[in-house]
Image (cartoon, rainbow, N blue to C red; front, side, top):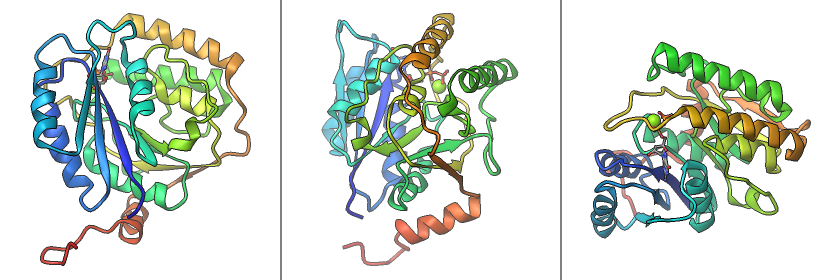
Length: 266
Ligand SMILES: Nc1nc2c(ncn2[C@@H]2O[C@H](COP(=O)(O)OP(=O)(O)O)[C@@H](O)[C@H]2O)c(=O)[nH]1
Ligand SMILES: [Mg+2]
């Protein structure tokens, strides 16, 4: 499986999550060439925990932005995308709300020829169980606003989450402006692509620590949508295909099968 995957993980005070995340990502990507890039703006002991983790797990790298001019989720993710060396780049939250096991079917989707893979909570086999009723309403409103503002989002069932994978070349020539939190919306509006694959996943409760979402984020999202209406490119001919849970399994078997117990791993 020759293509390298870099998983970019933005972190803000996630000391209780990063080790478990790295462990689960390692299990999910067994046999696949991968690394994890933590881009950290924490003001607690997370940098120390990340240093220890990176010292013992050679798949892990971290970049702590102490007193950086640029902080915030979107700038962190874009910085990670620019630093990472994978052929495919993924973005994933640190708090295990995005189950790391989903990375393997996402990788299979990329090997099958997709330019981008977007897991969805909202198609058959998916669930947004990790959200309370208020967050479900906020999340639904954000999706509705995004689709109303930008035609590029209309065919995508779950365009506003922070979980996606894409070919690194898609960044060439694309001017991503890191406003706010919705970095996938920026990628969907600004990058060139032909084929997007959606696969179902179950969104979970946060493992440890607290959410950092704030009202400011909502205002930044509105600002971002307004700006993208002017900057965004058209994607009228892009194709979005949706994989069922069964088909997703068969594609893992075809493109990146897990080695069975006792099988030669060389
Ligand atoms: N580097 C960085 N990461 C952030 C920042 N704010 C949030 N994050 C990370 O972004 C991800 C999503 O944040 P979270 O608080 O879980 O948002 P929620 O899932 O919408 O409640 C988590 O991995 C956070 O640690 C930030 O300012 N800088
Ligand atoms: Mg979260």
